[in-house]
Length: 116
Length: 115
Image (cartoon, rainbow over all chains, first blue to last red; front, side, top):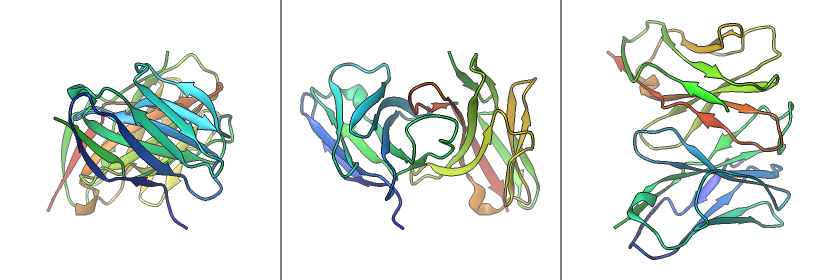
């Protein structure tokens, strides 16, 4: 079975531009979460979507938005890019959206975004 | 609020030795899960091991074991018989079981295995 897949793997954008990152979860997984990892830090939670609804949102500005499609894939959009948005963006999928039975969270290889 | 603390920014270990990576956590939740992930230079976050707060036995997965001490709020990762391929960044993480799937990560420990 394929794991979590993200595209593109690398991206270079200019300040002020907009970017869309894509994620396909593991087959059968209904929950997708997005994380931002800046250099030298652990990942920071941005969003979680479960069954196409937003379940959780981290402390990120409104320039960040996301959505989940009927096939459970997801897109993360970032508008008006800043230099500080340069980071590795990770997508995680899990079978359940929350709860004690939700013991797994598998990550994709990430999209490395550079804003110049 | 939940918090993960990893106090070892970097560690150097001889190949074939066992290594312990420290992790302490803070939470007011009664139910929570603890994770360890490995992140090689390629960037992918690789799931290693999971421990639930109500699990009475320490989790083990092959060469990985989690030394869970609930009263001390610690969840150390033990890697037995280290290999050169174990060189990577290691993250301790946790999540509660409220209404979302948010995982809180520590700052990580960079492990170097020496031949």
